Length: 541
Image (cartoon, rainbow, N blue to C red; front, side, top):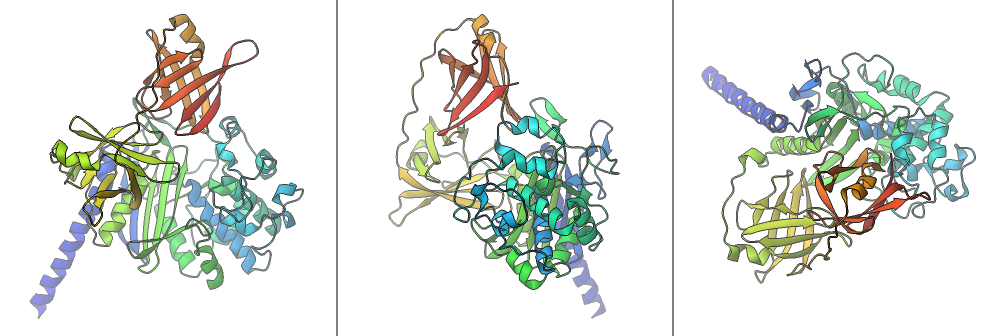
C-alpha cells in the first residue's frame, strides 16, 4: 500500500510538472516572439498553480520583471471604482438608482435622466472622452475631477440613457467624482483605506508621474524597429477609469476578497456581476464560455496591457500583466484557462500547414456578414485563400484542414461550416478565447472601387508631410520618400499612398482614402481618413 501511494504521488507530481511546463510554454511563445513582457499567475482558490515573470521591467538597464513588479492596470481599475460605489451604497451613502445630478452639481440638462447605474454599466450615452480628437493633447496635462468632467459635459449624448450600451471612460470619471463627494475623501484615499488596506494589497495604488514607486515596471510599445518607450499620459487624467497600478499577487488578493465576501454584501456583489446590456455588469464583463461563467476585464494604457479573469464555479483566477502594449495578455489568459479546463490549445508555433487544391478552396469564397456594418470577404488569389474584413487589409489564410485555417499576422483561426445540404453557409473566427460567427450572404465578393492615379511633383507632395493626431495615441505620419508619399500609423508599417485628385490620396493595400484639408492661407492643416464607411479627422501637429 505504501509503495502504491508513493507511485500515485509521483504520477500527480509529474502531471503538475507537465501542466506547469505547458503554462510556461503558452506565455514564453509570445515572449519569444517579442509580443509579451510581464507577469502571469494562475490560482485555484488561494492556491497558486503557476506564477512566472517574463522580459524586462526596464529595458534600458536590463532589469528583469519579477513577481514584485508593479504594472499599470488601465481599465481593470473600473471594477475597483464600481466596487467603491457599491460599498457606499451598502453603507447607505447613496443608491445606484440615484440621478447623477443628485451628487454632481450643475449637470447639463441632457444628463437629467442619467443614473449612477447607467454610469456603472456604460449605458449613460455620455460620449467617451478618450475618443475626442483633442484628447491627444489633453491627456498630457494635469487634470482635476472638475476639469475632467468639464472636458465632456457639454457634448451631446449618443443615445437615450439606458437604451443602449457603449463603452465610455467618461462615465467612470464621473463615478470617481461621486465617490469623492459622497465620502469626503479623494478617490485615492477612499481606495487606500477601504479596499487596499482591508485586503492587504500593499503593492497597489493610484499611480503617479512624479512619485517614486519602487519596483514599478516601465511601459513599452512595439515599433517598426523594435520596442520603444511608450507615450506619456498624466495619471490624473485616467483617474477612476484607469489610473491604478498593482501586482499579480495583489490582484489575486482582490479576487479572493471581492468574490469571498470580504468587501460587499451578497446583494451588491450580485448586482456587480449581473449583466445589464452587452454582457456588462458594473465594471465587469460577464459571459458564459464553453458552459462556464467567466467574469473579466481587460486594461490598456500607454505601455501596459492587462487581463484579469475569474471563473466563480471553480474559484479560478488568471492574471496577466504586461508592460508591452499589444493583445498578448488576452490570448495568454484564454490559453491558460483552456489548459486548466482540459481543452486543446494549439500555439502558433505548433500549427501545421497543409496544401489544398483550388477546387477545395473555391466553395469557401464569398462575402460573410459579421455585423450590419462589417463584412468578411474571402477571396482566392491563384491558390492562396485571402481574408479581408471591412476597413482592413487582405491577409492570407493557411489551411490546417479543408475546413480549418489560421492567420500568421495575428493569432486567430477561421473555421468554415456547412449547412445540411453540404453548402458552406458560415465561418467562425476564433481569437483570444472568443468565437464570432459570420453568415455567408454571397458567393461572390464585389470588386473594390477603382482609383486613377495622377502625377504630382515632389515639391507639391512635401506640403502633406507631417504628423496628424487621428485619435488618442494614434498618429498618422506622412513622409516623402524619393518621389512618393508614405503613410505610417502608430505601431504599423509604412505603406505608400497615391494621389488621385488635388489633396486626395488612396491606399492600394487596403480600401482607404486620405483627404487633406487646408486652412485659410492654403496650408495643409488637417487630414481625414475614410475607411470602412467611417471617417476620422486629425489636425497636423
